[in-house]
Amino acid sequence: MAYGTDSLKADTDGDGYSDYDEIRQNSDPLDPTSGRF
Image 1 (spheres, rainbow, N blue to C red):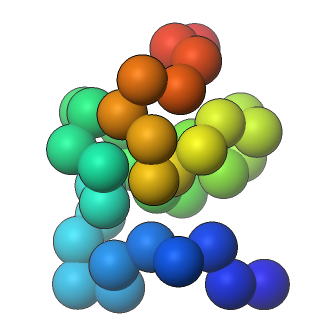
Image 2: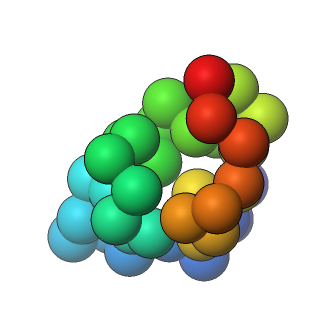
């Protein structure tokens, strides 16, 4: 599945949570203001 994340960065939106963790937690890996978990 494509999420539009940057494959060269572990944290595309720079919020301190990895894209992998955000996707697992149903958070938006492209939005730094999406829910904290």
